[in-house]
Every structure is written in structure tokens, then in C-alpha cells.
Length: 388
Ligand SMILES: *Cc1c(COP(=O)(O)O)cnc(C)c1O
Image (tube, rainbow, N blue to C red; front, side, top):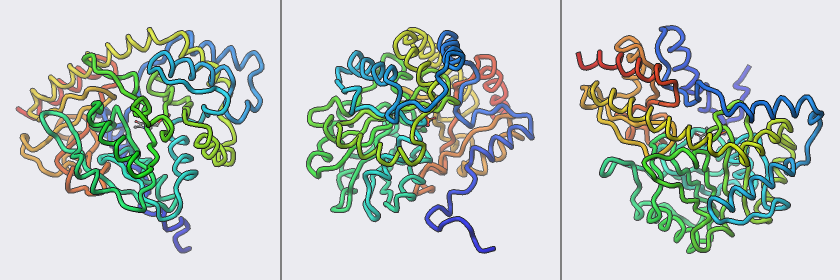
């Protein structure tokens, strides 16, 4: 049979995460590749999901999401960021941030439209943009003074008459950068000058460190009206398997996204929505503890990586630390990641898979630290073998 898959999706075969997770299993290595926590979310929130199933929340909820969750999202956005969204018409619950991103791009971009994203970028962006037959234009983030950032002039030069949207992920996976107000201002100015839509992936909004705070792009002057803000319970509450996310945007944009979403999944699962509503209302103290614990894990891993000989970029948020492998005598992250199990019994992800221009990221390797302390400490101990 000839290739069954449509041409625009070729090149999106098995992801690197599957390959590296298999490698970890086969070699008995510690898997710091894929970013999911190895501990559960808040107990009362888990109980709320069980209770929801036991008490009849098992049929189709309303298309935009259960009212309790839309109300809780609205209260959360107002309390944390001073942003007001009407639960009826400005909030849409989705099957994770992934569906929110895909349906936003499908709903808002015509074939041939250009979408700017900062590379290295989360892998679903390129696939969603390809599905929409739009074109991803990558603006490269590079290390400067110990953190990854972009050049505002390069961003400006990337805008063309075909540019429709800028996809902004902050806190940023995989670099750990939390965009500053200045960085966000340079994005906001371009959006307003050129009438662009901003699609913001804010799934790590609560997972920031050292007192750094996440600033939603929609809080900048003139941006609420043109921003599709996307969040998810997965990372905030350590329930990545629940696949519950949401979109906050003005009615016209939410209606567009919902028009597509009603035919991808129609609606998201009811029990998780009720549990996440509980989480947003009652479990932000638990999230603060998670954030402190993650910061400690970050520091343990960074100490281990530095002792092993990596150059380490201290992340201000997310689950991930970027490293430069050149001080260890390697230049090819792919080769390094494939050999790391044999060299040190650890699995990581070559950052170049997150680039349109892989050569720009070939010497970076990403490590996840959203794992139990003893796992991080064991990984750090094993990595010391690299400097032996
Ligand atoms: C994990 C992740 C997502 C996916 O979120 P889901 O709610 O699981 O779909 C989206 N964007 C980034 C940057 C992520 O790291």
C-alpha cells in the first residue's frame, strides 16, 4: 500500500519521547526524558473525581464545559491576574491544552497563514499548524546571561503580511524561561501593530521559582481582546493523565475555537472537570508546596549536572533544565542522548527535536526534574560517572 498518512502529517511519526522511554526501559535507566510527575495530585481533588463518578456525573456535560469549572476558572483568572472572563461565553473547557492549541490553530488560521513560534518549541505546535495547512515560522531562543531569550529585532523581522498569530509559551518548555514584562511587551507591540492574534500556552503558570511570577500576555495593555489564553490542570495539579484544559478569550475567539472543538471531541470528560473545579478553588496551597518542592528538585539536579561537567541553564519555571554538552566533549545531542544510558544509566531528550533548525540546538540536552527526590539524587549520582 502507498503511504496512508496525508502528506502534511508525514514527518510527525513516532515522537522522540517514545524512543527514549523505550531506551530507558530496555537499559534500566532513570528516565528524565518525558515530563510527567511520578507522584499524585492533591488527595481531596482525586477523591472529588471518584465522588463525581459515583454520584452520576457520567453523561455529556455542556459543550463549553461544566458550569462549576468555568466559574472556577473565571475566579482564578480574576484572583491571580486581575483578568475578568465571563464563564458564559469567554471560557471553554478542552481535552487538555493540546486540544486547545490544535483547535485554536484550526479555528483561526487559513491555509497558508503564518504562525510564529519560539524555537525550541513544544512538539504539538508544528503538528497542529501543519494540520491547519498553515506555516510555522520559528524565531530562535538563544542563551544570554544564563537564560534563553529571543532577539526582538528577529521577532519583528519574522512578521510578514501572511502572519496570523504568535504562539507564546511562557513559562517555556523546553528552556525553562519565564518571559519578562519587556519580552512580553515586544510581542504585544507587534500583535497590535499588525493585528495579530496571540495564542498563549500557560500550562506551567504556577510552576515558577525563586519568586519569579508568570505574567499572562493578556494582562498587557490592548492584549486581552486579541489573546487566546490556554491553561491546563495537568501540570498545575500533577494530573497529566486527566487531560483537562481551558481557553479564556473574548467571545468572538472562544466561539471560533468552540466551533471546531464541538467536532473534535464535542466536550471534555465530566468527572475530571468537577474535580479540577475543586482544585482551582481549594488546592492552590497544595500547588504552592509543589512549586517549592520542584524548586528544590531543580536545585538538586542542577548541582548534579554541574558536578558532572554540563553547562546548566537555571530554569525559572517548568519541569525542565537545559544543558550544553560541549564542556563534556560532545557536540551532537542526539548521539549523546542515545549513549547516555550506557555512559551513566540516565535518559534525557536531545533538544534539537524541538527546533525547525536542528543545528541551532544540537548541543543542548533537556533533563526533567519532576521526579521523586530519591530519583533525582540517584540520577545526579549516576551522572557523576561522566566526569570520572
Ligand atoms: C504538557 C504540555 C502541554 C500539554 O498539556 P495537556 O493539558 O496535557 O494537553 C502543552 N504545552 C506545553 C508547553 C506542555 O509542556
